[in-house]
Structures are given as structure tokens and as C-alpha cells.
Length: 313
Image 1 (tube, rainbow, N blue to C red):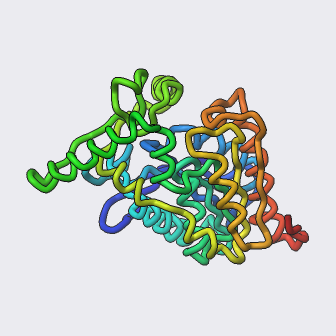
Image 2 (image 1 turned 60 degrees about the vertical axis):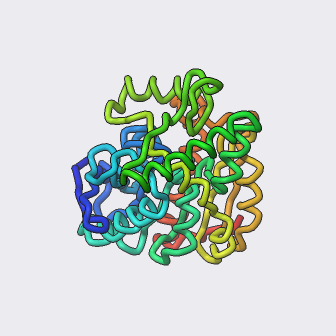
């Protein structure tokens, strides 16, 4: 039971899909889902959503402003606070739907949106639980470490040049999301496997994906930190999924953020000897992460509403 949806976010039309479970009857609990760096809704999220629908939970997937089927310019521009606002407006849309339960709303995010999910847990009291996968938690440290001593100065120079260009002309430039040859082509995420896997996903199921962003997006990323918000998550149940060998969104920083969340009802799923990109492969660790998330969402959006005791972990 999938239908196209549209809602307004700060005057811009955002589009997505709302899918309700085949079994049961509404109003259903719902998990709101959006993607990471340069995602469109066709990337990875539908595979995770399948697990949640089997638990009797509706899914709302959407494209951020400036991406995919949604309106907005400049295209391929990522402003994390605009994206968090889109999440909040998606929640507002969901709570007005007659077949959804406004008291049972969860949030799911991955990579960049894994960080957004944690921010949302701190600032939006409508959210009943949050799943954060392989999250970006500190943009500056993330960029500094993944680029290293040779590439990071080049990235800083490109960002500064773009700022001057925007001042002079009103328009900035673009940077590839990743590259096959990161030593010679500057990109945001300098990993050949990111380029390969996203290209495969684009060819297979996400033709609307564009493998680039504005350079200003990277400047905004380097001002982004989840740390101040982690300490404000007091009551919202949170699951963080961390890949032990994640050298892209920095698994050690993710665990540090997890340890700073004061909420008693939190859960860490540590996937040993797993890389970031393995959570994008249906034949690899995606199923493990999706199964754990589905169980957590069921516990807090389904079982809790049925009077089943919810444990603290």
C-alpha cells in the first residue's frame, strides 16, 4: 500500500512515499526515513523499510529539498539544518494522516541523517524512538581524518575559493561526492569503494542520484556537530548502530557520542569487523542492521502501545 506524498517545508514542496503494512488496520505507527550525503529516497532506504513494514510499522521516505523528486534550489545543496527541518515537517505531515497514529512516530537515519536522527531525538518531543546508523557526528573531525594531511589542505583551499566565488558572483561550485582516484580528483568522501557502490546503486535502482554536491555543503558539514545535542537526549529511546571498522563516519566518535547520551533507554549495536559500506548491501550486514532496527522500533512503537513491558538496556 504505497502512495506518493507531498508536503511543504519552508515554502518548498518535498515529495516522498508513504507505505502502510499489508496486514492489520490503521492507524499505524510510522517511522520517518531520510538519507545521507546526496541520497535520494531510492537509495538503501526501501530495503530497510521492508523490515519495518513486516513489524506492522508504516514508513514515510522522502527526498530532501534540492534532491530527487523534491523541489528546491540550488540543486544538490546539503544544509543540515534545512534537512532536519524537512524531517520535522515530514513528522507534521504524518501526524495529520488518518491512517497513521500521531502518538507513535519514530525516526530512522543513516550516515549524515544518522546524525540528524540524534539531533531530532534531542529537539522534537513528538518522536517516540530513534534509530541512528553509522552516523556522522562531527563534520570537521570527519573531514580532517578522512582526507588526511595531504588532501585536507586542498579541501580547505577549495572551500575558501568557493566562498570568494559566491561573494563575487552569487553562485558557488560543485564537488564530487567521491572519486575513483581521490589523490587526483578532490571529493567530499575520498574513497573509491563509495564511488563504486553508489554508482552500482544508481544503475540498479536510483537513477535520480547525482554524485555531487555544492562545495558550500562541505563548508556546512564542517560546522556540524551532534555532541551538544547528544547530552540533551534524556527520555527518547535511541538505538545506535556502529560498524567497528567504519573509517568513513568514524566509529570511535560514534561510540563517544553514544556514551554521552544520558537517556537510560538506549542501545548500542556494534557490528564487529564491518565497514561503513557493508550496511548498503542486501547480501551483507544490511540485514543485520535492519533486523535490529525493526526489533527496536517494534518494541517502542508497537509493543509499548499494547501494554507490553519495554525493557531498559
